[in-house]
Length: 384
Image (spheres, helix red, strand yellow):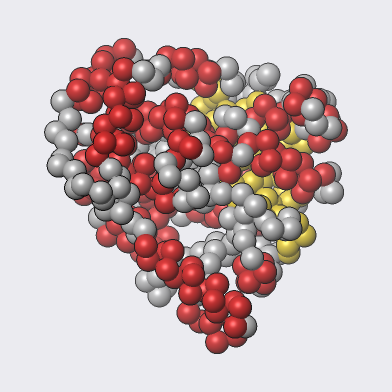
């Protein structure tokens, strides 16, 4: 359910048929590289795997079906800070629902939350306590999806101010914030710029990783964990370095070749769903392709790189600038990892929620939506 709000223009996704035809034609003309026998995923995305997925994208995947499902959510466009911002705004049938601002990550979009919105807005229909319902607001970050691309020098704290204005414009003066990946940077920043409105911050994946400066103070067990993290971080394709160096140069291939974009996306989804042989064993294949399709049809593979580029290049030491954190309002973490990660997170955040074992993957909203919704209800339930 949606409602009319001043300054909000109703929006409906309607990709031209010519764009769908162009996608299928480009897929049919792909120049496939030679495969290396027995390489599997060790050298990147396997040719046989990607050919099968691309064939399904061209001949089996139904964009119109998934477009219609996205259009079941009330959508709007509003202009904030000189940019047109696209958003989903889904109100709960429960009158006392808590407003919740969800911010997606990279390489993701509002598609990340589509399986999560129902359990959050209508817990009664999903066998949960209706007193823990949410009114859900899901904006597309500038440069992603149907939101306008930002100018150079755009920062995460500027997005946070935009989100605070968005929630004010929607009439919400008390709300929670949530996000993972890029959203885990933005959600705490919203609390920083609007501490009187934000009642709590829930993020996926913790508030960054330890650095070499933390090593001297680590226990033996924590050093072993640090070494394991280093092996993992050095074993994948470092998208931080790629997007810091030349995001515009790389975007020509992603914007011109759907298979090039698909390969890049599947590389990252494979790395972030590392417990399974292929990404679609964790996340539904068509769900993955809907996310990739949104990047393709909106031409945002390049503009979506701005947060990585700006945060890396603007960091004082030239390294990665992790979320600054905030202590004004309580924080909860899902999928944040070990006691070491919690100890580091507590330096700059007021952590009140950290589930035992802290389960959850990088794409928890997509592969574990019911568990993810349950954890949000648990965290915000104590703050309502």
